[in-house]
Image (cartoon, rainbow over all chains, first blue to last red; front, side, top):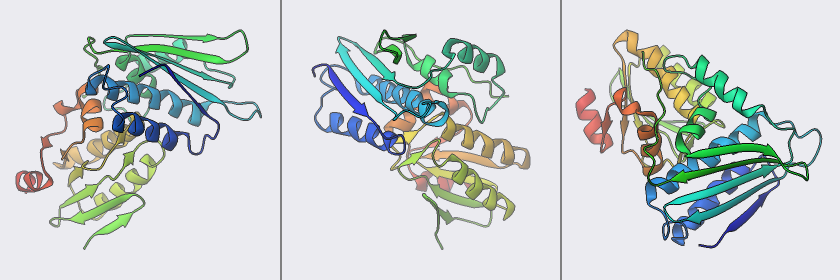
Length: 151
Length: 117
């Protein structure tokens, strides 16, 4: 699979479009030629969690939403870049707050933690052209897990 | 008699047990519907929930949170929540969050029915 770029413009259907895209890749064995199924599913979950975060919480300040997904398979890992034209989030701070506030069997506040757990590395930044950019990798060699308190 | 609530189909098994077929997704878009549907069942005396994930392609953090909420509600009443026919995307979430420590899993709904009753 070559580097692939997808652009999404409608927040009301972006989740359906995203999963349809993964299902298309699955039918074509596009990602599985490079990665095992578990890693592909972790990638799908991480992308879903971030885009769900955008749908629920992002402020696009009246602009037409634009979300651009780039996926770069590379050996036993895959690099993913998601850019959007929202006002952005204080992402590392939110992650810290979610980690500190995680209650036993939590109902909310696991999204960014699941993204963090599923990924090997991530970076959130502002691009020169004003887009918010989340970049992360998912690795077949990482033992991914999130420590949720159960009691 | 089966009842369909939003995206979920609820099938009574006994006076205290139901199977909820989750359908394609349990995520931030329908987690509140799931919670409301489960709440209605709890009020009607249901204590054991078999969640059928056969067709489920998406279980996200909000969806999982709604299941935790149900578990917190029924476990003090000796209730239980079990997973059946867990699809691959759901299994990834179960493994990532290690929730297999909380929710028993069964390969089929039938196996779950036998174990729960």
